[in-house]
Amino acid sequence: QVQLVESGGGLVQAGGSLRLSCQASGSIGSGNAMGWYRQAPGKQRELVATITSGGSTNYADSVKGRFTISRDNAKKTVDLQMNSLKPEDTAAYYCKLTIWVTLTRGWRDYWGQGTQVTVSS
Image 1 (cartoon, one colour):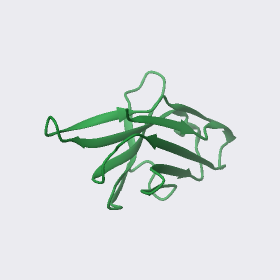
Image 2 (cartoon, one colour):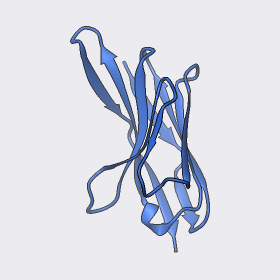
Image 3 (cartoon, rainbow, N blue to C red):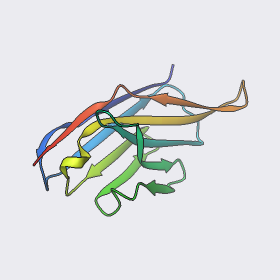
Image 4 (cartoon, one colour):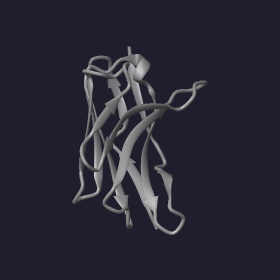
């Protein structure tokens, strides 16, 4: 059973930093993508950053230059280093894993439970 557990959220002042971590368990395969998404009250869930098993990254324009996504394939973890945090970064942050399911020959998404990030002004 594939599971994702996020940690590292909390309350910080504007300009501060947080590091979020996502630990995957179970068989996730060798070819996959992991990412961070966030959802603020009253808003749609949006992409923050993604990283493939090969290390290719993608960032939302709103976080470029401030956030850095990284992963450790051996440990099956993905981290999000968040610097220069702004009040508008306040949201529930979710880890997502996309894997190839051999049985159905298709991609499947898994989501973590979320961790709250609150940035005070």
